[in-house]
Image 1 (cartoon, rainbow over the protein chains, first blue to last red):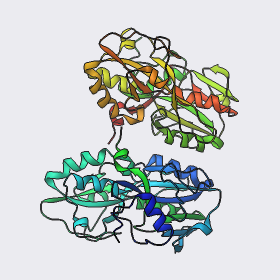
Image 2: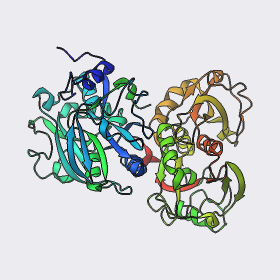
Image 3: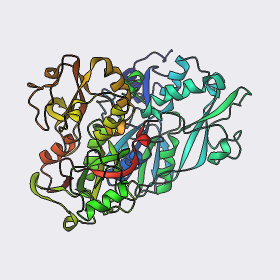
Image 4: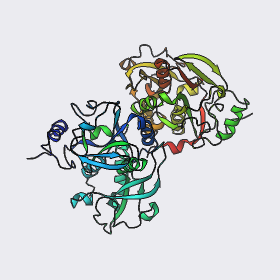
Length: 262
Length: 262
């Protein structure tokens, strides 16, 4: 069955009904997918301020009202507790369980944050014929912990996690300009060139994901990464949080083209 | 005495000591000035989310921690309760008093929001030789209530207030591009052309400020305005709030050039 051209609403229903349970990369092309963070209202202010203070790693696509399940504004007829199909439940900062349906954890004081995801800017780069090695090789993107300090907010703090894409020297200017137009999906690169300057000791050994090599005519280009807020949540040891499982994003009705900065 | 080229820190001290008590337009050129909103922590989440949901009228330059007086990060050795020199105190949404020092109202649960101000983008437009009629005529900018709905957040809602600058037709493209680079000071225009489409019946009769005329070779260009959050606060009837008095902005150490979007 070819899922690639299903609408976001159709895909969310297939996921909810467990007819589709794979990572969502490449699904519903042209539509934005989001990282998910669900927190009790008690911690929502600190997290919202953390996101505002660190907009590159934590660009917000949507913030729900407390108890809001159906995120109609950005995903018609959705249920954020079922439409991802893979959830991590955190208790006191530790992974408690990984489940395919988070309904049993629903409470009316929980707030959902949908955070922009690099899938959007990658599709914009591909449209402009910029080669992205990990996509060519069908690997997950390489991600690294860095020494880039985040701005604290209440219980949330930490260092930035970045994703790295080797870009051909002739294409770097184009890649910077294209991604700078999409600040709600991490925006422009945070670093270009020597990985050591941001505390990455061994570029061939990422902390998350897979290394796809760097050729002689390529330079490593680093973007802020959505793993950052997940790490901050773990580090905060707050009593309860839900996130999406790795690679399983929330497929929204937001068109990538509507995310261009104006 | 010529105050124009005093540093922001010097100006804040002069204001604190009541040696300077005029509107701050044109003071410390090259540095960003901000609108002020101070609210009890209890309402800070709703307001922060309101600002996130309505970034054009409510672009945030800084959000303090509760009880923070000295906003060192953006204004060295400052006191946000004394360094503006003109404050409106609101009780239950009504103007309670206008005072030159707000120290007596300080509480350790109050959060300060510094909201970007059009002075920054006006100075960028002037640098590019775009004529701004109200500045030429030494008037306050014309501002209007509109039918543009804001996104609600908790107790905060309302319609957008816009400022209008007549721009020569040949300069509109330039004005859009320049202001689009400064999203933290209202960003690009929200409307260009016919005022009736956004609910403005009589362009010559602004709701706030002064009308400076529109010439035949000029088109009215509308930007989101910092009066918007003040109106939302009044409308919310929350028990307590402090804002800056009209024209008296908080002079920060942030360079306008550092506000360019990246």
